[in-house]
Image (cartoon, rainbow, N blue to C red; front, side):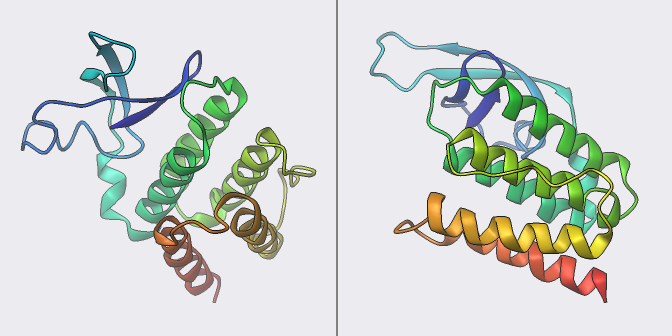
Length: 179
C-alpha cells in the first residue's frame, strides 16, 4: 500500500492480510487512514498497520466518482517520489476527494481535478498556471485535455500506460457526461 502524508510525502508499506475481507474496505483508494509504519532496517519495506478514519467506499457505487478517485490516487502514487513531502499536493488531493464526495455530478468536481493535475505538474517542475475555480464545464474539460498532454509528455513518457489507461477511462466517462 502507498499513502500520501502531509509531512513525509508518499510512503509505502506492507499490510499483512491486505487482501482479506476485513482489510479490503479499509485499503480502498481515497480513504483516509491512520497508519503506523515499522521496519527493522532502512532498506526493508516497512510493515504497516492501518485504522480507517474516513471511508469513501460508498462513492465506488457511482462509476464517474469511482473513476475520478482511482485516477487521482493512481496519478499521485505513480508520479511522486517517495519520502518527499508535498504538503500543497496533500491538501490539493484532499480537497479534490472532498469535492468528488460532495458534488452530485462531475460538473461539480471536474475543475478541482484539473486544478489538482496542474498543481502536481507544477510541484514537479512541469507546470504553468492553475485553472480558475469558476470555470464552465467545457473549460474544465479543455483544461483536463491540456494537462493530460503535459502528464503524458513529462510524467509518463517512456513508462507503462497502465496508469494513463485509468485516466483515459475517466475522460471517456466525462465526455459522455458532457453530451
